[in-house]
Image (cartoon, rainbow, N blue to C red; front, side, top):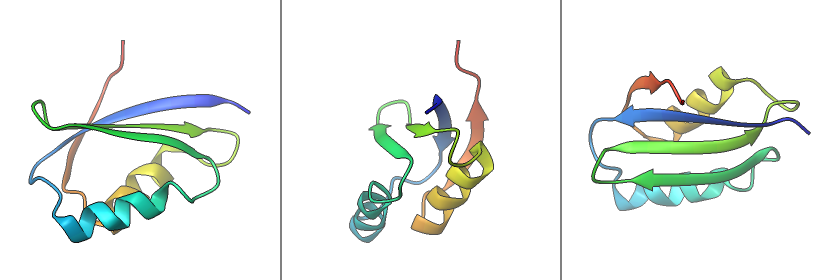
Length: 75
């Protein structure tokens, strides 16, 4: 297992329906953790990079309804 973390800035705050869809992402094999920082409008996802790549993570978030604006560089 290769643990990776990616962060994105998002625009509109997720609605209740979108949060339910995001919660279901936790069932995707390889997604370990999803954390929202509402004040900074950042979502961080910890995932298993041996299962899939970062574009898959952003695709999953977009399909759940998250308004992703940009990928952030983690230091």
